Structure formats: C-alpha cells, structure tokens
Image 1: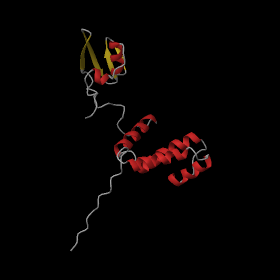
Image 2: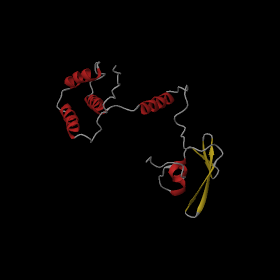
Image 3: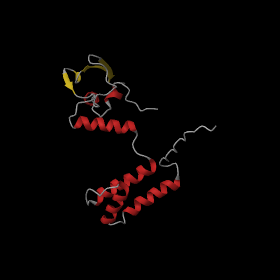
Image 4: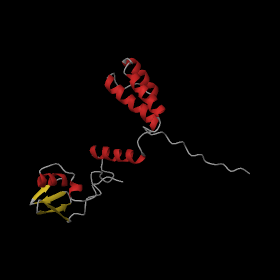
Length: 167
C-alpha cells in the first residue's frame, strides 16, 4: 500500500542566484518605461486583478515593478508583515496589542547605564518613558549619545545594549 507523501513547495529564487531569472525581471522592468499610461493600467489589472487606483505614471511603475519582483522572488515574510501591521495599528491609535515602539533591548526602568567617554563617566537612568542624563529627560539613547560625543551614534550600540548586527 502506498502512502501519500507531502511534496515540499519549491523555494523561490533569490535575487542574484539565477542570472536568467534576474535578466527576465530586469527586462520586464525596463520594458515598463516604454509603455503608455493606459498600457501600464492594463498591466496593473493583469497583475493585481483590479483596476489601477490612479493615472500617475510614477506610482504605477513603482508598484508594478514591486509586484513583478514579489511574484518572482516572493513577498515579505510573515514576521515582517506582522511587524508592519503592528506598527500601522500603533500609528492609527489602535491599542489592542503591545506597542511595537517598545524596544526589547531596553533595560528595565530604574536601570543605570554607565559609559566612559573622553575620560568622563556618564550615568544614564532608564525611565518608563525615556531616559535621564545629567538631570534632563531624553526620549532616546541616541540623543544622549549625540549630546555626549557631539556626533550621531546608535544609542543602543553606544551603551552596548545589543545594537550590533545579527550574525
């Protein structure tokens, strides 16, 4: 008796992995520049299954170009879509879920961060809604790092709070 085996879906190519696929995508994108607005609107309807929302050539080219790449290489990951949805909810004032603006790298309120710079030790206190340094309240560690150094810094990296890149 045969058992049904589940086939694994083929992985979509990634940009740069297949010269033929990349060439085909680039050819589609270059060909769009020669299309009229009405032809772009027809292509929109083919790719999106609904009429184009407007007649702005730049908008149509940008969105159609993205859609061609999305169909060829794949779209956003589930995690990225979820993060964007959460950010959109936050911007729109929906408070059903935990805020995305809260950074997981933030230490608990009350924590004191110490950093030596140019021979001086700087102490920052983490607050529930920001940070305190030298008696002033700041909204970000980056603002404090800039005040200390005079140049732009990633605040998490400056205070060694995991602001480095993932390996």
